[in-house]
Image 1: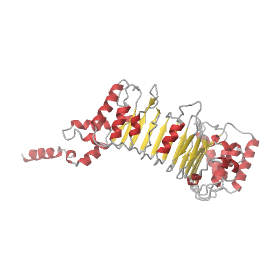
Image 2: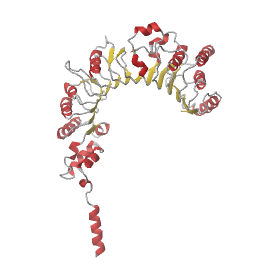
Image 3: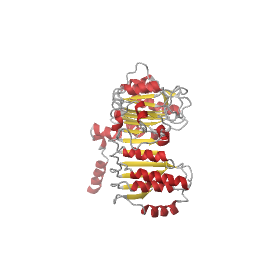
Image 4: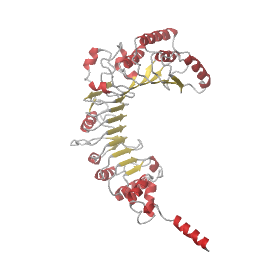
Amino acid sequence: MDNPRRLMKMRSEDAVDRISKLPDNLQESILERLPIKDAVRTSILSRKWRYIWTVRERLNFGEAFASLIPKFAAKKYVRIIHRILFLHHGPVEYVSLIIPKGVTADFIDLNSWLLILSRKGVQELEIDVFGYLETEVSLCSSLFQCHSLKFLKLSYFELKPPSDFCGFFRLVTLHLLHVTISSDLLSSLISKCKKLENLCLIGTSDCDWQNPKPLVISADNLRTLEYKDDDIRSIISKNLPHIGAIPLGQFVNFSVPLPVVDPKLYSSFDPFISLIGIEKLDLDLPLVKPLDRECPDRLPVILVSLKSLKLYGVRIFKQEDIAFIFCLVRSAPYLETLHIELYQESSYSLQTVQSVVECLEVAGRKGNGLGKLVSMRVGLSRNSYRWDYALMFELIRVLLCNCPVLKSLYVAPDWEPEQREAMKLHWVMKLLKFRRLSSDAEIILC
């Protein structure tokens, strides 16, 4: 008799709701880690659990949430977000909102949502419509009332800050992806965000696309800048004393003295004193204007802080590109990582190969400033001709001879699938014959 009673007692003890007895802050922490849908479902567990989810500080209406809503239930999707926001109590730290395919602009009430979030002191906000909407959405004035924002990411919107907008006083990071905004308004927006440190502009377009104006970037605290623009509009940089990284993507015309190949040309640009503070630099070489001139051995300024350099679209068959590579590395005495992505159009004549090899030899003998380089990657872009690697081999050979402390060299030839096995053995045999200045250098084929 005792055994069944003892067993029943043990089962009843196992059935005790231990989670409900946890302190409120632990319960809230548990709910923070659940998807928003599951967190809301906990409201049916008991009276105590009914409103716990309403104080969670992170609301993620991202891809996982959007995938739960059928494509034909656009009104339901909007209604659920409405209900969650209106029932929510307390502050909101982070909100991610994706407008899925099937939800039209007529259904979205961004003005009400943003007004609620502005009152809740939202600090991080991401809104993405993925370009699904038939008409471009113009963000309402409620966005510019979110004065607590520290992180803002907007995708596929038209942005028109009001004339009396004084800026986001706390904003540290701003990402604008495929956003339509005039150069004047964007310049004003950036300059008014006094604490802005990280700026990413990808695919932004000017409202007046027929007569685009230069984009003036003036930000006292800016440390990183990423700019990839399908609509070419020049950038004028002003007052960037703390810039630490500049990734410049395709279709960009960047009006700063880099690379500058002529002292007279250099003096014609706005002084970019902050160039000295750059720690990471990404460049798409074919779009750098001064490459069509004779390249000097070094830049007029020494990039004393530059640690990472990525060069895309390097036309290995052009001597000016080769000269520019070594011009940059000579100007960066403390460079630690170097990434070179090569582009070649076709196979080259023996005369072209010989002239490029001579150019590489001359550049290598001049001393190249790679004394601190520990990691290097040399690859071939996907749209390149892949049946002639002679010039790529020569570049690798010269670089290996000039890197005394190199630890690793990653080589990415991007072979065609049918080439891979045969080419791999050929490359290994070829690379093993190259002299290495660093005895610790390891070559890895990717």
